[in-house]
Image (tube, rainbow, N blue to C red; front, side, top):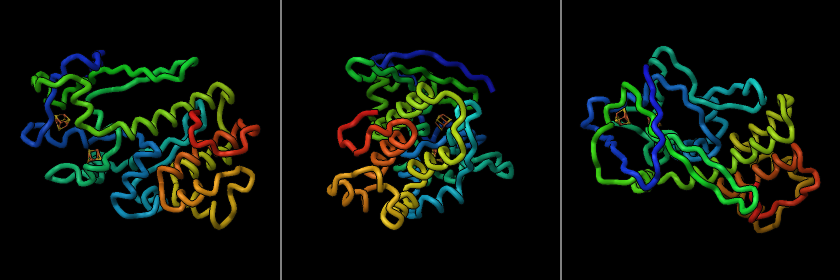
Length: 252
Ligand code: SF4
Ligand code: SF4
C-alpha cells in the first residue's frame, strides 16, 4: 500500500468526497491498525450501552509504548476478518454518530502546536492519499475547515489535545518508561472510566486529591467530567504532587 502525505491549509480546497456510491466504500474500515483515545472509548462504549471494562475486554487490546511505557489501546487484531473493524457493516459504520476521531478525520491528518506563552493551539493538516481510497479529486466546493465542520470532531480534538498535553508533560518530566503500576493508573483513569468511577466512590480513590463537591456530584453521571478529573488526577499522581486539587479551568 502506498501512502502520500500532502500538507493542506484549512482555508484551502478539500478535493475529496466519501459516500456509499464510491467503489471503495468501507475499504478504510479494513486492515486496521488504529489507536483509540480515551474520548473515542467514552463515546463508543456509551453508543453500545456497555461499561468501559466490557468494551475494553471485548473490542480492544492494550500494549505499551516502547519508549514511554504509556498504555496504547487499539481495536483487537482479528486476522480472521483481515483486521476489519468490528463495527463495519454492509451499509457502513454501525456506530457512526460516535465513531472515533481518526475515522472522522480520515483522510486528513492533524498535528497541533501549543504556544508556551498564551497556551493557544495551532492546527496543521495534511491529506493522506492511499491507494485504496478513491475519494480524491472530487471537487465538493468545501474548504478543509468546512469539510471538518461536517465531521463534528471538535469535542474529540478537545479531549485528545488534553491527552497529548499530558503525554508531552510526561515525556518532558519523566523521560523513559513508566513503571507498570503507573501505566495501570493511567489506563484506569483515562480508558476505563466506569471502573475509575466505582473506585472513586467505593474505594475513596481520590482521598488525597480534593475535588469540589459540585464536580464530585457531576462525575457520578458525566463521563466527560470524569475524564477531566482523570486527566488532572493522573498528572497529580505522576508528577504534580504540589497540585492537590482539581481545577475546573486548568489546562495541562
Ligand atoms: S468505527 Fe466505523 S468508521 Fe471507524 S473503522 Fe469502524 S466501522 Fe469504520
Ligand atoms: S476508502 Fe476513502 S472514499 Fe472510500 S469509503 Fe473510505 S474514506 Fe470514503
